[in-house]
Length: 136
Image (cartoon, rainbow, N blue to C red):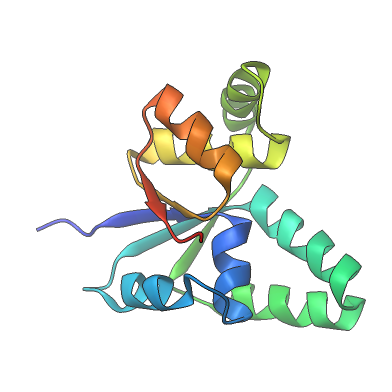
């Protein structure tokens, strides 16, 4: 039996660490039969700048340190192929560049994206990526 795969975006990780709506759903995914959890390194950059803006550099560094230490989360580098895939999605419009990487990774891995971002939800339907909705 193969492991279930999931792609997390910045929204999902921030919801988890800040105990926002959707955190319980994410916790259930993480503890469900040792799933494979993926996140684009671009999403990590998004988390970092959001925490820099909202909190402090120290808070951002601490979260990033914990994410790198989390062995169950696989950080996916932005190779040239992945950059082109994300750019193709971005070119369709309605989505940030960082969110385009999230959908490109979900499509590549044939894995659902865990998010509460309405822009990702709308674009995911168009390209055929499943969404696990944690938004309100």
